[in-house]
Length: 155
Image (tube, rainbow, N blue to C red; front, side):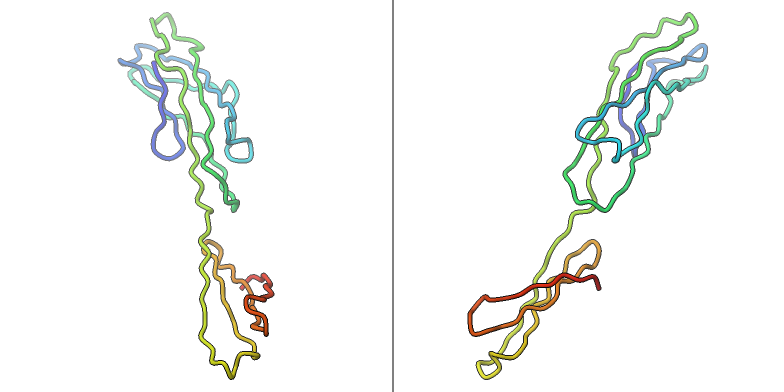
């Protein structure tokens, strides 16, 4: 028996052949760089590979957020609780779950062109940040080059 990751946020416990009787396993997750606020942890949760089956999908709920952060991971492990007298051993007993962040932002700055006769007037720089459509306020041209004041606001 071994455990691997599957599509989405499932792990898969797989046997090399069909179970002749139900096989009960315990599934536990352990924090890595991902912690309890990133996924719903499980401690000694029992799952059953039914007789006639070779595997079971074990779901782990990934908790979304709006925080830009690095890719994070955690570990899942299985042990056999009850093989009902079948000869079942663990081959690979742990696997890594990886949570890829989808909250990264890109910031873009739009410039402007001004004639010297308008140099002391207000001119707008607009910085847009992707992800949440956040916009930064205006900068003011002054007698000193690159003397800008920025304000942040949501559009």
